[in-house]
Image (cartoon, rainbow, N blue to C red):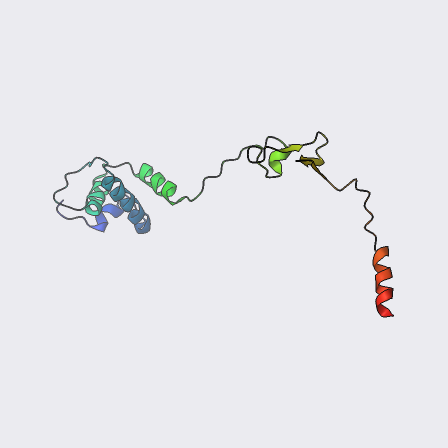
Amino acid sequence: MARVTVEDCVLKIPNRFELVLVAGQRARDISAGSALTVDRDNDKNPVVSLREIADGTVDIPNLKEAVIQGLQKHVEIDEPEEDDFDAMGLDRDLMPGVALAEDDDTLEADGLTIHDGADSDLDLSDDAGQDTDEADED
């Protein structure tokens, strides 16, 4: 085959858009040093990749998978959290002086204790604010 036409390749991959992606991936593989399955005949990598697809000498499903992997931005790995300390987003190694108390409601660091607040005796009622409003009216 002297020249590659798209019609030769469409017999192997019917979708022309998919053909472009797969041929481009194969051309990148050739540029990266992958072995050729047809003679180069002084052709450039995209033409060689199309010739390989038309001849059926490359594994098309593997090329499709390589295209998908190349387009993925982030592969999410689901790892379980070890304890509540990690759930709060705190790193033990970065904060060596911080310790989580056994009741899981108190955080202690350098003599400072932070409580959860659910058991707090602090009065947050609005009674104190009423006295200041009356003084402002006079």
